[in-house]
Image (cartoon, helix red, strand yellow):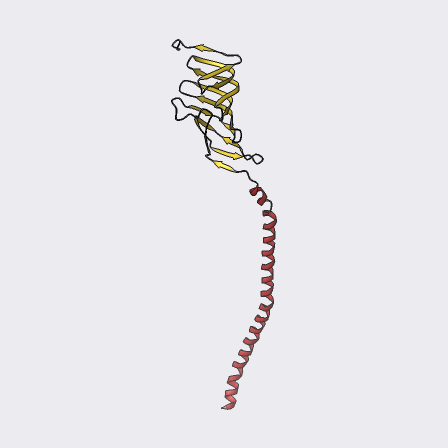
Length: 209
């Protein structure tokens, strides 16, 4: 019985030893492979961090130095005669060198909006300087009030004095009829409009005398 038992235990013991050897070999391989995989991952991560640092560095100064953009800005105040004015635009960008200088996209202004005959100005672009109070308009400038409507290429409105002036062709109609000139000015609270340079036009029959 003892011999048979020994022989029965012999093959099982040999199989267990074979399994143990394979397991030991696998463990030895893992001890080599796993550190290598970890090293590759560390090197890859370090490379990605370095790449992102190098490629992302130039973007930071640009974002820091980007001009200040205002969306739907509003500038309000009163001129020397106490008339209120409101300047609006689709968007505005402050000058990096002169913080008080604001470049306007599609600006519009309403002067004396609380009065009986408010004046409205609009243009494609403009510049408003908060320091000296000058609003400079360029491109398809439109001037309208209760009695007149004019189109011109440029205009300068002084928000402190309420004076509006412009150099360049102006055409439109007023209480006296059609008019055309090379320059113009609006003074005395909008009561006096002066045209200069090649003035021409036509007087309507029902114009006031």
